[in-house]
Length: 227
Image (spheres, rainbow, N blue to C red):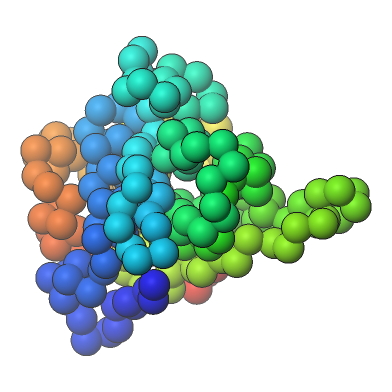
């Protein structure tokens, strides 16, 4: 599966239409996480033909989860929930599409899962280098690194980061580090959205409509600053 990148001449409708269905579902899941008071990250497992096998989202702030998933704990991340329903010793052929660069625990879960490729929308500099386990020991290094595509260098990648910075107060712990990594413009937009009633209005909208509404406010001129 290939990734369709937005270009300077694309608008939000064209960018959204250029995504395959696993990507669109990952963004839907991430927005649903925002709407339910969780960290805005979504993930989708698809087969080699691009059919969705399982889709899920971050559930750290919830008390309940669908059977086979995790809620209300520090491990209730989107990638872990998306991978949790895959059968043990399934063929190593699945593609994981996630809206945010995986953290340390999710990178480890990916390493242990039957995943042949990872696709990342938004960059998260807090977790740079967490996907490389080959230097730990010979046993871990026996398997090659899981090939990774992304993060995206377009408005969709920026939007993915923005979703993860809305609500739940997690950013407050790392704001200074994120600013040092170039996320100042994204954090400023997140603050603007949360400073009045605009986020409440957006939450009632589907994710593609939210993307269209925010498109011209996404800080695209500084995309490379956090990649």
